[in-house]
Each structure stands twice: as C-alpha cells, then as structure tokens.
Image 1 (tube, rainbow, N blue to C red):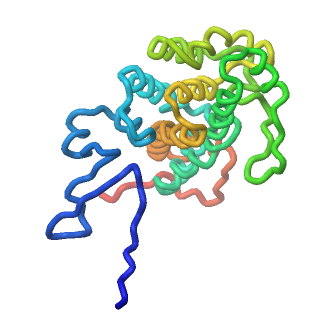
Image 2 (cartoon, rainbow, N blue to C red):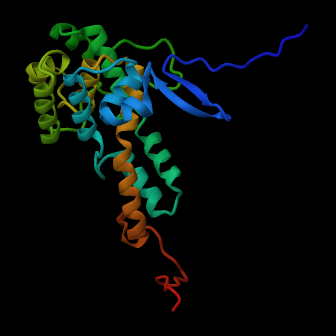
Length: 272
C-alpha cells in the first residue's frame, strides 16, 4: 500500500480553511489565530495589523500608536533621499512601476541611510542597552566581521549622519514626538543622551537612529526591523515616481542637461 505525499506549507503566522466548492480559494483566513476578514478588518487599524503580522500578538495601544507615527515619519524621506531619487529616475525614464519600487528598495537597503543600517543600529541596542559608556565604545570601535560577504564594514557610526552638521529638525521632531507616544525605553534614553552620543561620534543623529530605537521599543528583532523599514518607506517612492513620470525627462534636471537629441521630434501631440 502506497500513500500519496501531501505537501504542506508550514506557517505560525497564517492559517486558511478552504471553500467547500473550491479547495484553491480560502473561506476564512486567520493571522495568529485572529479572523482577518471577520474580525481584524472591521475592528483593527493598519498599524495594529502590521504589528500582529510581525510579532504574532496584539500590540498595546502605546505600541500601535508608536508604529503608526513611525510609519508617518519615514513614509516619504523626500527627493534628497537616495532611494526616493532612484524611484524618481525610474519614473521619469519610463520604467515600469514595479521597477521603480525595486530601484527604491535596492538603493534604500544599504548602510548609508538604508534599512541595513537600521538593523545594525538595532543590534547595537541589543548589545549596549542603556549604558552610555558601552555605546561610546561600540560606536567608536565597532566589532569587525570575520569576513565581508554581502555587506562591507560600516564606514560611519550606525544611526548617525556622517555628512550632517547638526541634528536635522525633522529628526529631532520625530524623536521628541515618539517619546511622547512611548515614554519608557530606547527612545526616551536616546532623547536624554542624544547630545552626548553626537559629541562622542562627531556626527548628528539620523532618522535611521530614531527608527532603530522605535523598532527596538516595539520588540522587533534587527531582521524584522530591517524588513519593516524597507516596507514603510515605499509610499514616498511610489508617489514621487508617479509624479516624475507625468513631468517627463525634459523637466528632470538630472537628465535634461545630460541628454542631447540630434533629431528631437519635439513634444508628443495627441491625435485630433
């Protein structure tokens, strides 16, 4: 007697029950035991659901508010940000929308204002806690990896801006407000010791440093924080790519002066 092997996807996050007349369609979906469309959809906010997906438990009201406000703070870093600029280049160049977002993800994944820098800063929180002396030692003399695989060694203290003259106003505003949302933990300690840390590394605090502290207070691992930071910054990339697509490359200063058409057909004219 031979039995047919059943392929099973294992997940503690998600469970589905099939429709009676179609085993390929879900009748009910459960996220960590909660009915997504029967319970979460009418009762939960986006930030609460996002927290549930990552942590597999309901957030407290303070955690939900902290995540919601962090999402607002980092949703659109603006055209000065490299990841947003990458999406803008894709939009104005006629790339597909998926390619624009992929460009933003690729550029925004790194160690200079990117998601991996957030993960490294979160790892510092796990090691240093709230000990100022340990933080100074870690930031000034970071541990060296045994080998460089995907990521090269950091060239600046994680969570700080190596090109900044002083802490940018939006960074300070974000930190101050998030501390009001979550007055105990990494954010509060960072607010109290920001100046001392900046003096130690001779760099101002960056938004990545604020995000790392907030994600630490939310109880996320560095890996979870890296992934979530990538996700939260996509709205700005999307809208700037769409906007530049409408303006066209002639109105994009980074392309306009560098492209010379020998036989320019002129603006496209719609048929009468």
